[in-house]
Length: 620
Image (cartoon, rainbow, N blue to C red; front, top):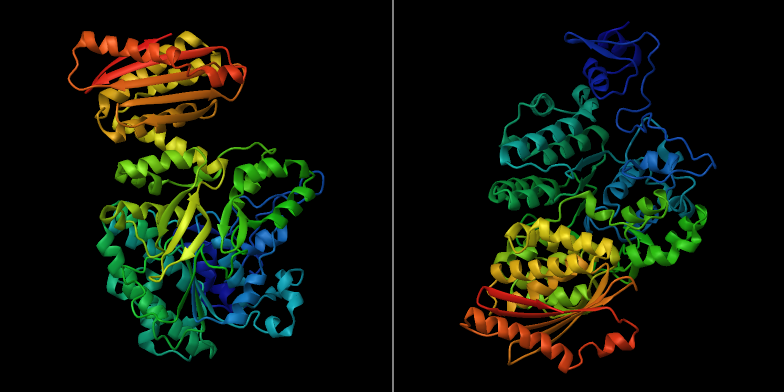
């Protein structure tokens, strides 16, 4: 066995670098004994301290086809070992335009981290010849003008995608750790004769984890200066998912702390920094209102509304078609489109890449795969802040309709409280709405026709609505389960009882005289029963009467018609009479005629009367 000191002499690296390689698992067989690393005599020097494809090798399927890169955000692995959808022309488009600092805003799980790692591997100076990871990709065919940039820049790379903590203290500790790791990737600077002692002292502070909050806020600026001095070339700075800790700060009450830190952190890196070749950032929101990018007039923002780079995040129709053909499931294109297509980025129709690769890899079983990759705080906030108008629009959206909304790309989470209409802007940028029709306004906002993109997102809405109703006490889990079980078993009597309970709970919770009650009621029905029923309503204004019909999607379910009536201050006896009147009206007005014409003869009829928080449900 050898020590770090012995290997540092053999490999021509600093002892600290060898120690760091051991800590990061880059040297096979290295074990720590006490405070010292013991390294096998036959250990090989890692090809590069900055770029490593690791030993994560997935066995190809028995058919010889490459596996799909589920959860792989390492470009080298994705390109070498998995089915990789070539997005390298992103590099060409960038080099053609050459913006100094680019911000890409896209929903989560749309390939932002993988694309940023691809940029890192392409541009970063390395002892390894990393051009081999691009020679078979589209960028290499674009000519020497583009190839000449490969492997020519020092690169600073940070991803904040996992900075999700409940306190500011834990958050800054995590950021400190990320900076420590990134400085560790550049330990060649510790022996550089181009740096002064105070710079090396600062470097050591970051590396040892002893830097305070103020010192950490200068970390990008100082590292870029040191790299520029050492290499004689200004670095590229890449910040992935920059707004993740900001969103956490909003929801966990340390917003001011994180905003204050990020403002200084990014200003030093991107504002008037002569030691910067190019900057790249990704996130979900732009967050310009918080002045994080104050004075940064060289920032080029590329959002879901812009045509630039519109095909590089997510899969295009052609890319999906090629993938389906490769795996021999071309016949599934229709189902795949129905579930995971529908996003509109710029002028490009886009599929959700996370859901597509999960769908194919799991035997083409359609599920809401994207919903399980993170919290849906946006939808939670929407339901908490929803006014009657917003709830009614949610109901329309869930019925497959479009609504007109003003979209402000500078919206931030806390603006929800200031103006609930900002909900649509948040839902659009976060991937819960699409805007196939848009018109730019004089103030920079858009007037859009928005709708739900696909079946997957509709399922997410329904899940969140049901979860919200359970949390606020509008219904109980028992009642929800009874409805699901009765539908599964096709048990009419149990279904009658369960719907009666649902109406009772809903009316008891909401103010039955308010408009919001009706919308909440219908949203709940959609969340509970939309898989089995198409839900329609024809609300008549003026007399408090509402008609709701549930048309079965399969023959084995009964049709359901509900007639709702309400009046103020009714006695128990008069309330019962009003329920009878509602039930009789279903027959006298022949509300079941449309269903019968469609061949639906098993029809449950509900006459429902309420007064204040009292309810009477009569069933036929």
